[in-house]
Length: 79
Image (cartoon, rainbow, N blue to C red; front, side, top):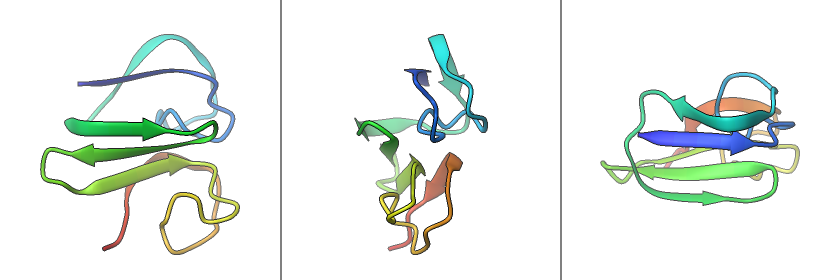
């Protein structure tokens, strides 16, 4: 289970919206083995060693191969 809360101005909480959360909110469909977060983006490695990201992507921070933003749900980072 992955829970997220805090500022969500760029979708960095992976809740499919831009609403800040003051209490932990479950992020469905992911079992994480590692989580790293910056001020406006998040990276998660799942139990299968796949890398996912979300959040601000104006400069390509989410490593998705494009500059679309915000990324409000976890997206698999291409290999």
